[in-house]
Length: 448
Image (cartoon, rainbow, N blue to C red):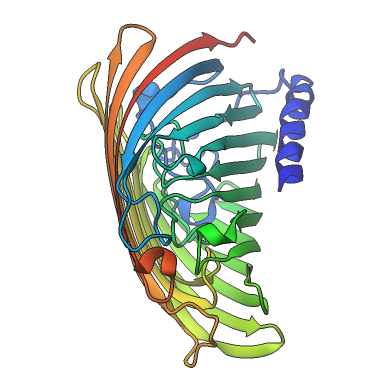
């Protein structure tokens, strides 16, 4: 996992040097989907990129942003799964942050890093050092050939171990393997998500592409998460996209995934093969609706014993809008998946939505909600497998600047989870968290 992240960092260093050789190349064509001669966009059902979370007025590139966030939180369920009665606590954390964003005629690279240090007032055994890091590189090899690499790593110790409450879980236009289907309220976990894509526009209306993905979930101390297990997934996909007219895209995609779960005993494996047909309409360059559906074949195995295999319908729907002072994204997916801390193959129904609104020049509101339900597809589950269950979460944040370099933020998060047979959740299924933070930050433009 660490080696993958270091590889991405190496690419970040190497690619700008490579791109400098091509800085005299012609600028990219107009990407407005209303222009039939524009370079084609990659529709949300087949791209590994999440919908935009920042309004257009806040989008900027070629800058260095750094700062520090001081945060305090009250949690009413800090010892979930350990005590029969929920235990509350207050924690204090500090998050140094840095973001590097550079754009050239061919390259767009973003590097973010935010370590965190958290101290609990009563349960000092939960004190933790967290990590948040990410790399996003997009490089145009030629006017019609584009490559991208994304990698995010998180070492977390609480429900939302991150310095920015506005950075809610991203909303995607494609079904994603769950990194964590069940979220421990307070427990150490390491997650890594990597994605590489290549797309080629071979004609004015035709594009093909492919991608590879990898996710990993690891709990360093299994005693903190009774009933949850390590897991990993890998996959590949290929797609064809056709532009019907100025705003309408159709296409097809094949996806393969292999999901592993690692209990103390035998290994659980779930294989899926999915064929999607998709349709996307761009009402405006930053407002799109996407639909996709198709058959999905799955096979689940415990060690060498085949437990179940069948065909299931799969579908996704998503909507994304980025305005001058607001954003909104929502998605729904029905797929067969596994992992995410659970054992077995599951029919997954998941819905997510996030919004952000700049009320005035100095007031911002952010909100996000999600719901997921997992149903075990094995007719006679083995003893170790998870029965399934559902999760509901929501959070809201309000932000207001204090002078030129400081900001204050208030946030509230509620998490409800119901999974039979998982002690971590069965004892205390609800978690409420209130937070307040003060941040200092500054921006510096990057010269060409």
